[in-house]
Structure formats: C-alpha cells, structure tokens
Image 1: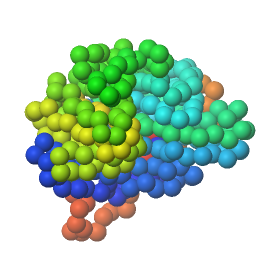
Image 2 (image 1 turned 180 degrees about the vertical axis):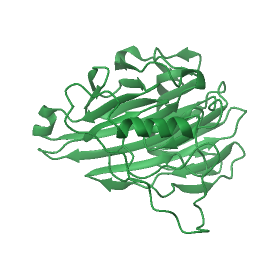
Image 3 (image 1 turned 90 degrees about the vertical axis):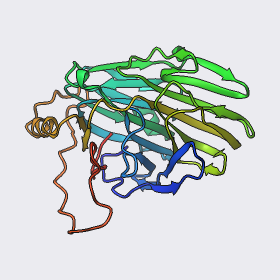
Image 4 (image 1 turned 30 degrees about the vertical axis):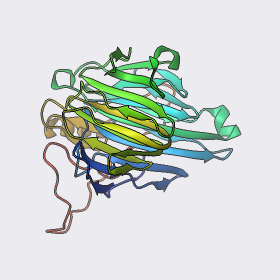
Length: 333
C-alpha cells in the first residue's frame, strides 16, 4: 500500500486445529510514512486464495493537516486491483483518463490487462484539513485469456452493491457471487468478495459454491471450533463442506475466495503474469517510459526498483514457492 519498502518478512502463521481450517495468517503491521500497513498475501505458506494473489490492509491512520496519501504513478499488468475504502477518501487517477474519488462502501475495480498506469492520492481539501484513512486493496490474477485485454476502470458506488441479512449478520456483496446473489462488479473468473458485520455471538457459514475460501478480520475476533481468528488475521479454509465462524465480539470481516488461477502465476513488483517473460517485458517497458502517463499526474513516477541483493546461500525460508514469487521490496499499490 506504499511506494516504499513494506514487507519482505512473512505474516505470522498459526497451525489450525479445526479440520475445516487450513491455516491462519496474521499480518505484521508496520508504520510507513504514518500509515499502519499489514500484508497477508502473498505468503510462502499460501500464495493465493482463489484468484486473489495480494492483500494489503492500510490504517486506520489519522493524517494531520498538510499530510496525505501519495502513491505516485506506477504500472500494472495481468491483474485487477480491487480497492475498498472503509474510512476516509482517496483519489484514483489512471492512464485511461479516469479520475475518481472513492469513499466508504464503494468499490474501484481497475483491470490492468496488457498494461495501465495509476496513482492514488489524498485530495487537496482533505490534505489541508487533515483526515482519517482506512483502506483494503486486493489484487486478482486475470485468467490467461484476459492477460492481454485492453485495460479498464470501473467505479461502483456503495448504493449499487447488494446488501442483505442472514440471521443477525449484515452483509454487502462487493464482487462476484455468494449466498445466491451477484454483485454488478465486472469480473473475469468465479470469485466472491463480501463484507460482513457480525454482532457478538452471531455465526456465519462461508459460501459453499467456491473452491477456495478465506475470511479476514478487520476488527473484532472470530472462532472456528477450537481456533481463534484475531484482528488482522486471514483464516484460509480447506475445500469442501460449509465451515462456519462465530463472532467472539462485535466483528467486521471480509470474505474472499473463488477458483484458483488457471495455471502458475508469477508476481514481481507491481506485475502479475503467467510467465516470467511477460514480467521482463513489462519491466523493460516501464524502464523505457513506454507505459502511458496519468493525465493530471504526469510529473512524478515510481522508478523500477533495483534488483535485490543476492540472498546468502542456504538461508532458511527463502525458497521461492512454485507458481508465485514472494512479495519483493519497494512494491507500490
């Protein structure tokens, strides 16, 4: 969620005791330019949940007058960014000419396809007054059939997203399909992305129509039989069955899942691709200034990071998992 080095160390991993539960990953918040940032995907223990290959949770952070979010223009290929603002506001601009303020309850879905450039910043008005910002951003790996599609950007206001109730639980369907409902957000593979509010003592079963499923605790705490799922933790469930969670206290959570990518995926800097060659081409294009600029934000950009120094030989825990490389340094959103 920042253009600076954020997270090269792994999220904490907890062994699951519940048969339905595969593992629990807990992001380790770090303060970057006044923002608290946790990253739970990708991890060595789990490279994706369904098509979701990246998960950053930023904030909540209070920004003093004169300060704001400044993610300078940077490129993407082979993925869709899914931005959800919980508190505050930020301005999205991209090389298609889009300029869109995103506020709580709305979804920004930007499909990079063969290549797009974008930036995210605090508005002039909120920078002057000071503000509070709390954001979650996910990346979705595009199917191989859509890796080279034309880039797109779509904004979905909060009022356009289905809201419903299951028992005591209030839900908002952010993208995909779940619980017999479908979001208007344009997607390219089977997935679900749901926000839910559980009062203490309430239970919720996970959608059973998706192969891979996880639940992230924004605030509060859940339990799954003998396992506790704390705040800023992502619980990943085994395929099959209908696992459920119980709120140990009032909780706000995100459910995500779907079909896994249709083949290996490689992730480096801001690029996701089905081959290392695609990433090499994208890096060369960015280095050569061949991506389109962002209208209204043409003066700055994030340079391609320098290659990391070679790791010591036989260093434990540094193996690259098959199909998706671990999160490198200097990643922008």
